Image (cartoon, rainbow, N blue to C red; front, top):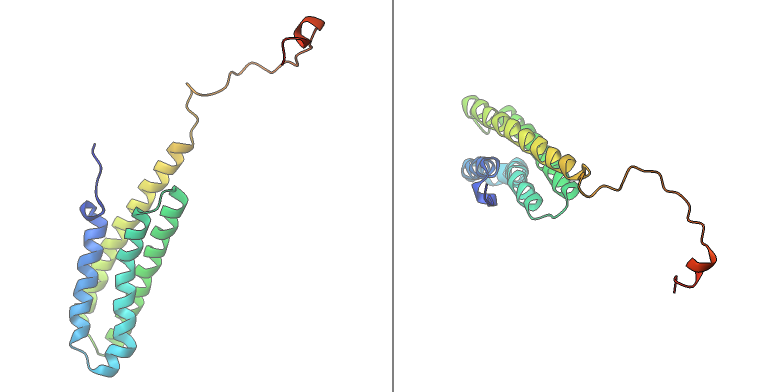
Length: 152
């Protein structure tokens, strides 16, 4: 299995499509709605993919997982703003329902990706039996007069 680039990951591609769709939708709003709800919605949606991308650039599993958790938080924040847009009649109900369904699909993929990265982290922590120390107990060395001269 070869190296998979960030752009090849399904979770990242879906996050990009979702945030680009919100960007287009918000462009049609009036200035006040863009500045208040629109900005928040687009920023939250953009943050999903941005945090997935940042996790991809991190070296340690702990940092990678932290940014994936941030992405998941941004996903739920995006859902919040979709509900606000519907309540404020900025988006039609059908578009909101489709948006929430897309975000739910992304959540499933993101959670699966988080689980995969967690499993990789846990697998890396397992001791390699070839590198493990012997299981025999350590015995103290009692130097003799002969051994003292060979230490240095």
